[in-house]
Length: 475
Image 1 (cartoon, rainbow, N blue to C red):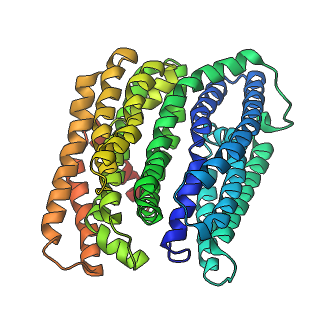
Image 2: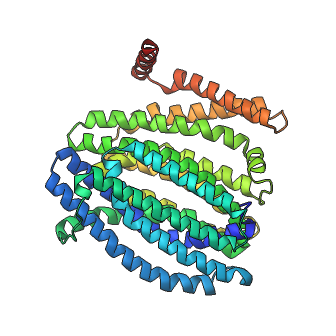
Image 3: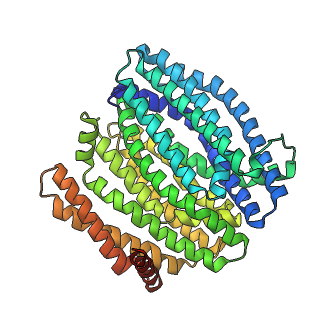
């Protein structure tokens, strides 16, 4: 934001967000691609695996052509006639739109290759490329400070070039290491395409809900408050995106195993993995969320110097939403493995869809409070989690009472105790680097203590002790 300025940063994110709203289609198909590829890997049927991969690539290419056409027509009209963009930045905003469309379409056709990497559980490559992508974006941001050209346009060019580079790396790796990714042929296997689209069609509801909450709320904010509040939203969304990616990496690492366990009939082992990975995801996320929640004001001032109004409150509410949803999100992996996602999407994801219309209506009533959409989001997140768990009891055989006692209740107690003790111990000190460091140390100590005393059951404690003993014996 420092390199672009608050206004241009807000413009980039709201215009780019308008394009990424269509990412719900790719997002819906992504989990389907991973599921079908992982199942065939588990079955070791190479011929069918090749057909599924080719079918997936074909579907994405067709979608890219169709979505690109719609974005060119609808996006240009909406940007130039409906959005609240300063007249002197409209030319640059149109460049951002075109480059965002190109980057989005490249990402869309890359999804089958990403799905193959995850289904084959090559998590190290996924991590390395993610680090490379972040590094390149950091270099691009730093470079903006030393150029005299229009920085908004140049930043969009940099992001598009990075997207192309990542796409090339994924494709080259997959072609070298995965047999099904070599020698792509246009696939006319309509029955496979129907299975994938039928599965993904229900996932579309959840993907639309997620994108509407991220980008739809940003557009609502733009309509009521303009690009400066978009900058606050975008900064908060960037922070939230880091936490979301962090917890998603845990899901990415565990969900192929959940799918393979279900496909091989090991349902008991599958549920053990779900329970343990749910707790692990929440504990690890809590470790980084608690210090940031407490020191948000200090962190943002240290990072940005000039922090847009409402950024701290928006970021805290976004983090609270993701913490709440982590309590139930891993159960979604079982819905997907069992191909029983219709009721989950109809009942649970629809709750999140209400975020934008409720926010818009409430802002019409009280137009001077930009925090309203984020309070709505937190409230809907609570309903969303209970909807997932309640429906899972009937649809996929979740022992709801055991999950509430062993996972949800333990997680909530640990979080409340940790947050309360750390905040109570540090809030009397003035904001400083020392206080931030102390907050991190106290969070680590309290989390470890409460996770051991409250979070882990007897078998999990034995498992942890054995790992520690193995580490010590190796030394």
